[in-house]
Image 1: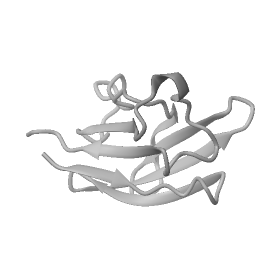
Image 2: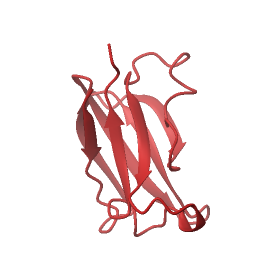
Image 3: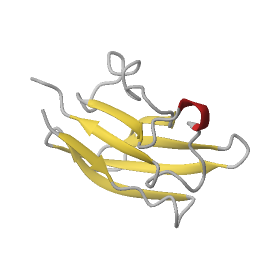
Length: 112
């Protein structure tokens, strides 16, 4: 089982799009900071920029795609999650500036 750390560019940009290979399939991920909600959101797109799933709020320690996988065809089969490097629940808030430094977006390939 392979774990991939997906590079993020939050410290420089409030929104960006990047291509990634997840379980040998190419996807485009779109990230944006929502000032009103004080949260990062992500959308998953195919290589032709068709939205597979939009508006996923980035929160730590959950499979971000789990509740959508059965109803949305084409999503990555592995676990996409945000890991807190400090592992401190008292301060575990993803902010505008700590995505990519304290909080890392990770992808763990499925065992199949």
